Length: 266
Length: 204
Image (cartoon, rainbow over all chains, first blue to last red):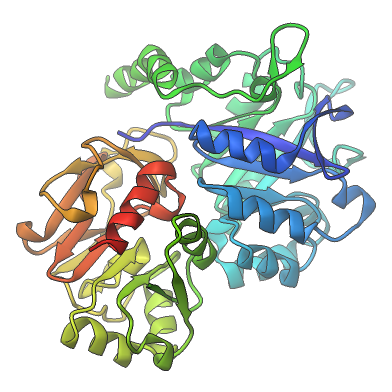
C-alpha cells in the first residue's frame, strides 16, 4: 500500500540549520549534515532542504554543501535556493539530488524554468509557492525572495498554470502559519488541491502528528511537510531532531489514512 | 566491482554513494570500452521510455551492453525506466525496447486509484514477494521502497515475476530472467532495504 509522504523541511542560513517563525527570526537548530545523518537513522520518507539566503543575497547555490547533503541522504532529496539558470540546475542534479525546488524564478523568469525542465525532465522540478493572506482583502498572494516581495499573484491561478507547464510537484508554504505549530492552513490547501491533480506537498503550521493525520484523513495521498515539528520538542521548543518511528507512523495511518480510504470507497 | 551505465539518465551519484558506504568498488561507464570486462552492471533511469532508449542508442554502448548481458551472461540490474527498457515496447513511446525480458510497458490503471493525484505513483510503497530470489535475501515481505513512475512492466511470463506492488491495481515491481534483473522502485533511495538489495545484487 502506498503511504502519504511525511517530509521534514530544513532551512539553511549562514551554513547552519535554522527554523523561522512566519519567515522571520531564524533560530539556529544545528548542523545540516548531522541532521541528515539523524534523519537517515529515522528512515524519513523524503527530505526538503531550502537555502533561504541565496535568493535574497542573489548568491550562487552552495554546491559543496549540496554535494555533501546528497552524498549523505539515503532517501530522496529535494534542494531549493538560488537556482537562477539552467546550468546551475544541471550542476545540482549532477551532485546527486533527485529534485530541485524553484520559487522566485517561476515569477521572474518562467522561460528559464521551462529550459531547466527540458534538460533535466519536468518531473524533477518542484515549485515552492510561499503564500501569505493579505489582510485588507482576505485573499491569498504569492511572495518571492523568501517572503520579502509581494507579487500580487493568486496562488490558485499560478498552481493551475504550473500544472499546465507540467511541473512535477507543487509545495504550498504558508508564511502566516510557518513556525506557529498551530496546524496547517486547510482553507489554502483546499483551494489549491481542488484545481490541480499533480502531486501536492503542504508546509507551514504542523505542530503535532495529529495535524498530519487530519491532513491525510482529508486528502489521502499528499505530502505532509513540517519544519518545527521535526526539530523541536516540547512547549519550550528545545532543539531535538525527531521523526515518528515506523510503528508510530503505522498507528497514525491506521487512525487517519484508513478513514480516508473507507470514505473514498463509498 | 559494479559498473554503472552512464547514458545521461538517473542518479548515478546515488548508486555510487551507496556502494562507497558498502566498500564495494564501482566504475562508471561512459562508453563501450568502459563496459568491457564488467562483472555486474546497473542500468539506471528516470523519465520517459523513448528518451531513455534514444539516449541509450546514441550512447554507443548498446552493442557492447548486449554482448555482455546476452552472450557473456553478466548480471544486470535495470532500475525504474532502466527496468522498463528491458521489455519489448512501451505504451509511452514508439521506440523498441531492448527486449531482453518478455513484457510490455503499460500505463498504470488510473480508474482504480482513489486519490486526487493519480499519477505519478510517487512515494513509499510495499512489495509482495512473488518468488524467492537472492536479490531479496534478508528483505522481508511487505518491505517499503521508494517509487516514482507512471508506467509499469507487464510481464509476459509469470515465472519472471519477483515481486508485485499495489497501487490501485497490482503491478509487477521486480523481474528476473536468467542473469537479468529489474526493479521499478529506486533502491538507491530506499534506506536500509534499498542498500540491502544493492548489496545482494553485488553478491550474486
